[in-house]
Image (cartoon, rainbow, N blue to C red; front, side):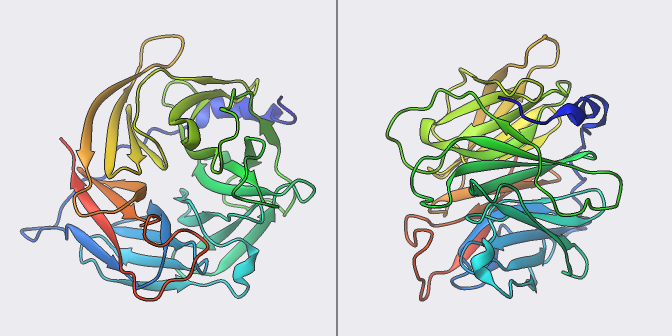
Length: 324
């Protein structure tokens, strides 16, 4: 059921299709593996301006900022109160602001991508807290997936999308975002998470595509009606989604990334799977970013250190995969 999305019609003309950046590093290759801090417990990744990338921590809520060209980096933003909700998915907007899917307390934080200054904090639905899993940002909206119940994040909750309207470079005052409740036929008695990765669809400005992890399906979401329809394309599973033009990349936690073609010439979007890339050396990939002709995949290693558990010496990496 759509509760408040009247401004979404502006989405019609303002979803941008950004070309992939040109990969250039002289004669020196970009590193194939980028090391993150020990016990960082990463989940989300986003590519910023130039060769900058950001990775968020499920353990502390910190954000790591690095350089794809050199592989170097450091923590650039930390949470004074990690219990606020930690850091899951990430996105960078046109003003170089880093948007955080804030996890178990149902909100988002927005940082200056240069300085790490916390610019704003939002909590979406205090009465029915969510697990904010992932985020995508357009010129007019920041859009977030809800994975379940914050009261017990490992139990199934109501699948929802939170949509925060934006106007230029001014962040709106903290307030509840409009909510779209999705009509998804969920498999019964399946645990967290439900909705996960999210992306826009080029040429279909009233639709989004979301990952439903426990069903291993991709859903087309109509932002005007709130209705979600499963796509028949077969995937092994899904976590993070990232798009370049009409190519959608789906991170499959079984150590692969699926490349899927999005239709351009029909009234309703369709997907056609093209190929699968192996994330060699990884344990359990979570999300990905795109730069040049490469996919950058975070290895969350949830099979080694499950979310919410302590870590003593586990190392974490981001893997670079060449696309065709």
